[in-house]
Image (tube, rainbow, N blue to C red; front, side, top):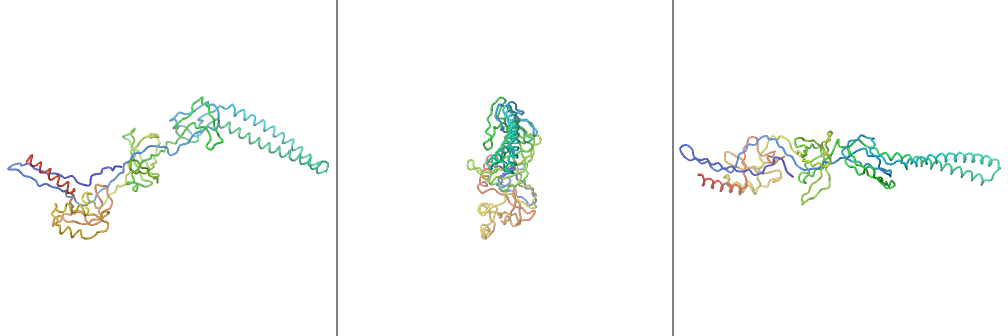
Amino acid sequence: MKYINVKFLTILLSTAILVGCGGGDKEEEFKFYTLKEAGAQQLELTVEASGTVEAISSIEIKSKASGQVLFLGAEVGDYVEEGVVLARIDQRTPTNTLAQANADLEVAKVRLSNAQNQFDRSKRLHDEGNISDKSFEDAQEAFSSARAQLVRAEVFLENARIALDDTSVRSPIAGTVISRLAEVGQVITSPTSAVGGGTLLMEMADLNKVRVRALIDEIDIGKISIGQEVTLKVSAYRDKRFTGVVSKIEPMSKIDQNVTTFPVLIDIENKDNLLLIGMNTDVEIEILNEEVALALPAGSLRTRKDVVSVAGLLGIKESDLESFLSKKVPGENFDTFIVLKKTNKGALPFWVKVGKTDLNHVEVKGGITEKEIVYVLPSEGLIKYQQRFSERVKGRFG
């Protein structure tokens, strides 16, 4: 993970050597620090990541019918409206089955009518005592059986109609075909009795709104929130920026080469269909953009350990520093640090409480006021290296 406009917290030193001019040589003293004034500052920090475009939802287009594929109505990349016929399967067998079902239904109706008449006659005769109970029960059973056969014939007819309708596969949504797995002339067999049965013909997705899956370093994931605006770029349109919104932060991390990241899902309006499935994207998530009333360079902050190494270079007495460091301060190295302030008595250490940071500057919440000046210094080792470098330059050109 990288940050935009990130600088090292140490400040590179400048060696100023003036070659003599006019009446003689004049050499400016080597400076190992810079002076900065506390004041208002715009803090900006952005997290960068990479991601991949994917469909928010895709739909499998399956055929429940078996037979030869006679027609396919869309190629990969085609946009189709809802209800458009995407495929037709050979209808001969379902058509014959429907005709048989219609005939069976007519037979069942006739049988039921005959059984009804026979039952009514038997009931009258039984009531008059002219037939036995057994004869009446047989008529009653035949009537019940005829009614059941009619129901079965009606169900068989409805299933035959559905089977015939299944030979025409229609688009369930308005969207784009993203894959096609069948060809005209192919014979398919669809086990409709299985869960999710049917032969996969195509896949469709609504590309008017797509999603980018970006991997965010665990260090930064706490700074990301749902609804946060995101800027994206793709190689195909380097001069165009796309805007999206964080829709989900997945709870399961991914570890690759000892680097832990979390998937962040970003939804993007894609009315022009410029973003295609599988495109790689550069993701920028702004996590800080705020003007603070008081700030200092991040390089001016010091800890107990490194303030000791540079205090002597600024003429701070060891006894004064020991006295300053003798007291424990809440929040040390967390939200409280040391700065070396320029005063009329020279450089003096002060504790300051800090807040937000963009790694270049840090918000100051207490311990210093506006327009006060602090020293910005690198580490002691870097100071000594710059001093030696300065001496070599002087020896060569002085």
